[in-house]
Image (cartoon, rainbow, N blue to C red; front, top):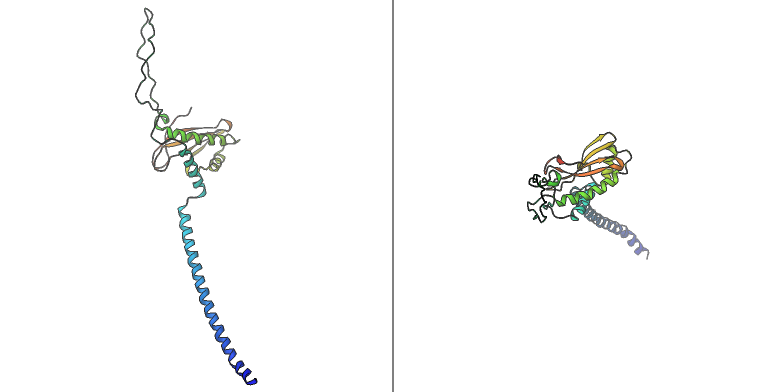
Length: 222
């Protein structure tokens, strides 16, 4: 039995070394494989994440676009302007007034002049979208006790209008004047002309150039 123990003790360390070496190699291969899979997955995820991040708009821009989409979906399709006269006139069903002797008959009735400015250039969709924006902007500006350009910009940013949409902020006495670019991507000429003045704040539609840098071409302020 002693001889057998000697044989066992003689060969057992070698076997343990071989077994340990084999386990080490297998473990290394497994770890390498796992590491490679994780690295590939990480790179793929990182690459996709970077690509997605580069394609997705900033949170402020996404909020503004969601706001625009909501208002536009609630309004009619572009192209119809019920404020612009079509040329058709209603038949005159009223009886002519009696002219007293010696009086000069009136000249031809004066027809109202065709609308100009925003009423002529903006369609029903623009007016509908404008009303939605005006309501929320005016309500927010009425809460400003000191409507400076800085506080007005901060308020408009909080409503979802990014700096790219806000133009010509200017102090005018105790009021601040500004414009909001509401042109749709690929078309539209709608903008808003605003006056931040506390409880008497006002926002009305205006017309901007269809393409290129923001520039107001027409506005009518009461």
